[in-house]
Image (tube, rainbow, N blue to C red; front, side):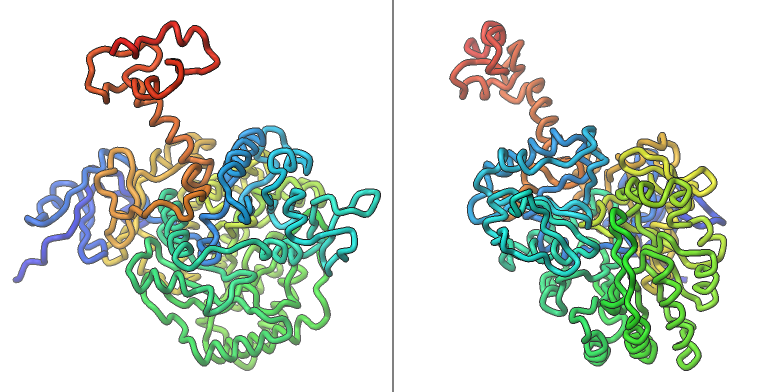
Length: 628
C-alpha cells in the first residue's frame, strides 16, 4: 500500500477544541494542501513528518476553529478602513478625544477625520458623547464626522460648512437636522427613524483611490485576522454597488491576497426597482459562483426597501407600509425560481410575521425546501414566528447589536422585554438554524470576542446585565454559534467550522484559554496565531516568526491605522509598550545604563535637555546619558 504524502504542516503539543462530540480534544494535527488530514496525539502525528514538513509547537495552548462572522460589511468597510479613526473598545471619552485631537493634527486638507460607528457612548467611563463645542475646540478647521450607531451623527463647524448645511437646508425624509433657537443647525443629525441622512452626509466626504482601497481592505482583513476571524458572510450594505464596489476584493481574490474567506450577498440598490435588480443578477451571477475564498451567497440583506425596519431603539418602532407584501413577493419568487438563498434584515416581529406570510404563500407554488434563507437580527421575534420559520426550513442570524444598544432598548421597552432579545435559547431549542455575527462596521464593532462575551455573560459593553442566566449560552454553545453553525448560512456544512479531518485548515490560537479564563476577560481576547487554509495569516508573540500575512504600511501616510491600529487602539498601546521595553534593553551595546533613560541614550542625546519627562527638573539631574 502506498504511503500518504507527508503533511505540509504539523501543530503539536496543543489543546485543540475540535467541536467533534465524539473526540472533543486532540493534542496535534497534520495539514496538507490547506486541509486537516490527520488528528491525534503528539506521537502519532509527529511520526508523519517528512523532510519538508513545518512543525509548530503550540506550547500547551488552547486552539479553536477559526471564527466566522455571519453578518459583516467587510467589502464596504475595507474600502474606508484606512480613513477611519476607530473608537471601538476605547474605554473613555477622554482617551477618544485625545486620539481625535492627534488625528486632526496630521490630517491634511481637504480630508476629514471620521469616526464611523463600532462604538457606543455607554462604553465610555463618562457615559456620554462629545459635545459639538468640544469637537469645534479640537478641530476648528478640519471637518470631523462622528457616526454613533445608526441613531445620530455629530459634525463640527468645518464639516457643516463643507456639507453645505445651513438654516435654509430642509430636513430630509426620515431624518432631522437639529437646530438651535435661531434655526441654525447645531451639528447633530438624527435618524428619525432611518439612517438615510447619516449615509448621505458620510458620502459627501473624500474617498480613497483604488490602490489605497486595496491597501485599506488588506489592513481591515489583517485586523480581523488579529482577532481570530478566518471567514465571514458579507451582507452587502447601503451605498455598496454591484459590481463596481466589489472590484477591490475581486482584485485581491485574483491576486491570492485574501486572508479570510468571504461569501457575499447582493443588496438591492434602487427603491421600486428591486425586482429588476434581482432579475438581472440571477441572469449574470450563478449561485455559489467563485471558490472557497470568494464566492456568491445569494440575495440580501436588503430585499425590498419597503420592508426595512430600522434598528434605532431610541425611536419608536417604524411602521412598514402596506406595499411591503407585494414588493417582497415579486422578489422572493424570482429568488426561489432561481434557487438563490436570501437573507432579510428584520428587527421587529411585526416585520418578520408579515414576511413569513409572503414566504408561506410562495412556498405553496415554489417549494422553499433546501434553500438556505434566513432572517437577520430578529431581536423581537415571537415564539409563533420561530415555529413558522422552523416549519419552512429557514434560519435566524443573530448579531450583537443589543450589546451596543441594550440600554436604549431598556429605556423604551423595559428590562423585562430585553431579557430574551433576541431569544437565542428559544431559537436553538426550536431546532431553527441559528448562528452569530457582528453587523460591523457601523452599528457595532467587528470584534468577535465582544459577541462571544455578550452571548455567554448577557451584558452590554456598558456593563448592563440584559439576560438572566437561563437565557445565556455556555461557552461551547457560543463558540459553535461562531464556527460550525455559520456554515449552514453559507451552504458550506462539512467544509469548515470544525477542526476535523477533511475540513479546511482554519484555526486560531487565542492569547488566553477561552474555556478557562474569567468571563469578563473574553471580550479582551486577541489571537497569537490565526491560520486560513494552512497559511499563517497573523502571528504575534511566541509565534511571530511564522507570520505570512504581513501587509505594507497603511495608505495614506496620515491614516489613523498607522498610529492606532483597530480595536481599542491596540497599535498605540503596542508602541508605548515597545518604547518602555527599549528603555530597559541595552540596544546601544554599552555597559552603563542611565537611571532615567536606561539604555535609550539616543532619545536623550536628541533632546534639548537630557530628561525623560520634559516637565521634570529632577529628571535632568538624574540623567547620566551625557557620560556614555
